[in-house]
Amino acid sequence: MTTDPKITIAQTPLDKDYYTDLYHAALTISSSLELASVLQSIAESVSTAMQVKAASLRLLDATGGQLELAAVHGLSLDYLDKGPIEVAHSPIDSETLCCYPVYIPDARTDDRFQYPNAARAEGLVSVLSVPFEVRGKAIGVMRVYTDVETTFSDKDVQFLSVLASLAALSIENARLYESVKDSYSGVVAAFWGSYQPS
Image 1: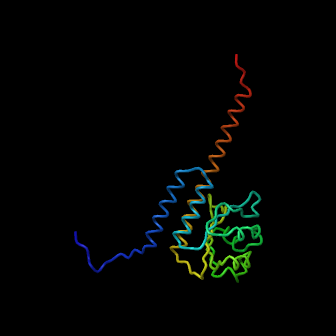
Image 2: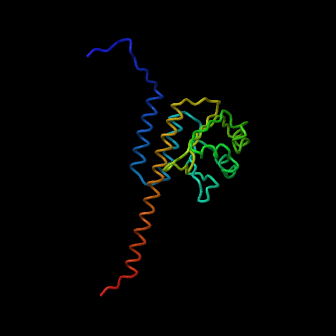
Image 3: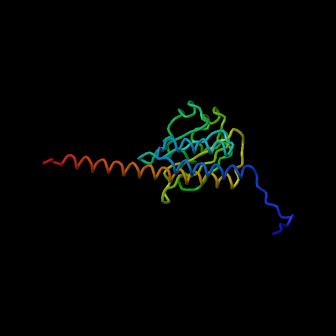
């Protein structure tokens, strides 16, 4: 077999890192039902792979009106204490929950960002946000933040979207596991409650 010396396939280190991180995220998700640790691992992985300042994962509460923090990497406690993320007052989250990626070049000045002063104080600039989707319905948001103005590539968006899909799968698996465990406990309790030894 001969190879044409004029044909080369360029592969950047960043591409390789994305594949490696996706592989490790999939391994983590498939090896654990501890949702908090899986999501934390994903937040750390995405920060490292995308070389961003921070990442956060938020899930809708039971009312669907607020996004509650599920995992975070690289953000200060002061920033996290800035106030609740209310979907009705956060256009970036309202847009993301419509199931498509949202990019903000500068969170310090963009009125779609709910807390621009907190972003300024934290040193956050560009933001990329993608939805967590389960069976076509958004259940939360994954977001990355940079400390300099950044234009995200299609590969960045695809990588973050795939990680969000893996995280959503993990969330769904954990919820199903908890549901099965609760059902089993209920059946066992009912059996022993009605069981009369002879």
